[in-house]
Structure formats: C-alpha cells, structure tokens
Image (cartoon, rainbow, N blue to C red; front, side):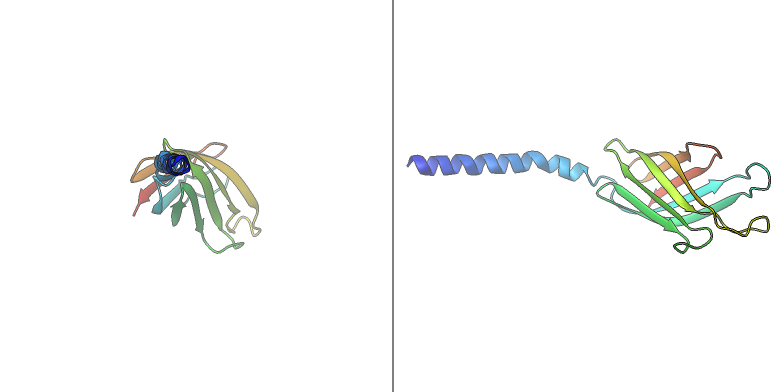
Length: 139
C-alpha cells in the first residue's frame, strides 16, 4: 500500500511540475507567426541613396528570421533576433550593399536594430550611424 501511495505522489508531482512549465512554454511563442516588415532608410551622407525594402519575416518560439533578396547577391539582407516576453528585441541586420552607379562592389555590412513588438505590430530603429526605421505587421 505504501508503494502505491508513493507512486501516486510521484505521479502527482510530475504532473504538477509539467503544468507549472506550461505558461512559460506558452509565453515562449507569444509573437509566433508570419509577419511583414517595411525597412525605410532615408538618403544618407554623400551619395548614399534612400531605399525601402518590404519582405516577410517569420517568428517561431519568439525567434525572428527574415530575408530580403537573393542570398549573397547585391542588396541581400537578413534580419534575426530573439523577442523577449515583453516584446522588446535587439535584432541583427546583415547583408550586402546594393550595387549602384557610384559603387559596383557588394560590401558586407551589419548593424543592430532596437525593436518593440505587441501581438499584431512592431517598430524598430537602427541603433548606429544611419537612421533606418522598421515597421512590422502580423499577417
């Protein structure tokens, strides 16, 4: 009889521990889904042209990933990062500059984006050098 009660107690503890983890597991995917992002960069110093990219991003388990353009081609960009439970995120943009009449080479670049998300939208800004804005909309 004691073994039965012990087994029941162990099962109850295991179930309760599993339930205790459920809200955290659910919270880990609060922002999950398909999103669209619009990146807008105004004209920069010198001959640096303004540009605007629109591309899809996906969030899975609060990890964001999106790509604009063809990998390793001129104008290619990736955007990656983890969203915190409060919707804040530091994203990393990496890519290759677009060729232009002023530059034929594709120079690699990388910068951080400070962003804030809610259930259906988000916004962010480049944190260094040239100011660029990001607007996110959940599909």
